[in-house]
Image 1: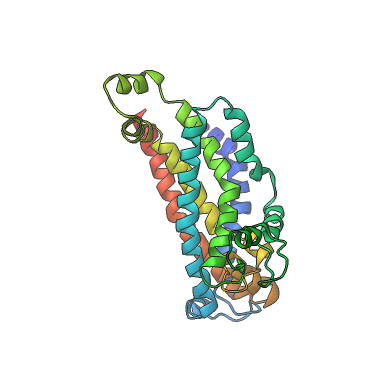
Image 2: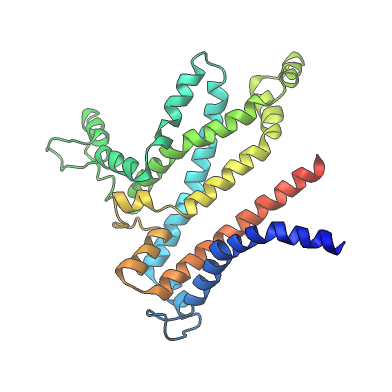
Length: 289
C-alpha cells in the first residue's frame, strides 16, 4: 500500500511542482503585495482595497465590467446559438461558418485597429472616413462620436467589437453540440406535431444545455479579463475604462504595485465562483454517466 502511494506521489510530484510554481506562488505573492504600499515596503492592510472602492475611476471600471459581463456574454452565447442552428440548415454551411469564425483569426489589437477606422468620427459637414458614420450621413443623420459619446454609446461600441470577435467561437462549439443531438429524437418530436420552435426549446436546448453553460462560463472569464480592445481603441478614456485596463495603469503608469495587486486579487475573486460552479457541474455530469 505504501509502495503504491509512493509511486503515485512520484508521478504527481512534477505536476504539483509546476502548479505550485506557476499558479500557487504568483497568486499568494499577489495577495501579499496587495497589502503593502506603492513601493511594496510598508504594510498598509486593506487600505489599497478601500482606496479602490472609494475611487470614482475604479467604480466606473466596475460599472463597465458589469456592462460587459451582461451584454457580451448574452450576445455572444445567444448569437452563437442562433447561428449554430441556422447554419445547420443551409447548403453553404461550411462557407458561412468560416466567414463568421474569421474574426477569431485576427488578433485583438488588429481587431481594435480595424474597428477604430470603422468608428472614425469627423464633425458634421466634413467628409466621413469611418464606415459607421458614412452610413449615418447617407441615411440623413448626424455623425456620431462612437468612441467619445459617454457613457453608453462608446461602451456599447466597444462591446460590439468583442461580440464580433467571439461569436464565431461560440457558434463553432455550440454547432458541434447541436449536431450531436440524435436525429431520431428530433424527427419523433416533429412526427408528434411539435413545431420547430417547440423542438428547439423543449428538446434541442435541454440536450445541449451543458455545452451552453461551458460556452457561457468561457465568455464570463474572457470578459473579466478584457483589456486589449479597450486599450487599443480608447485606452480607458471617455468613461470606457475596465478593471484590467485600470490595473495596467496602476502598475505601469502610476507605479502603485499595491493597488495593481489589489485589482488583480479582486479579478481573481470574481472568477473563482465561476470556476467552482463549472467544476461542480462537470462532477454532476460525470456522476450521471
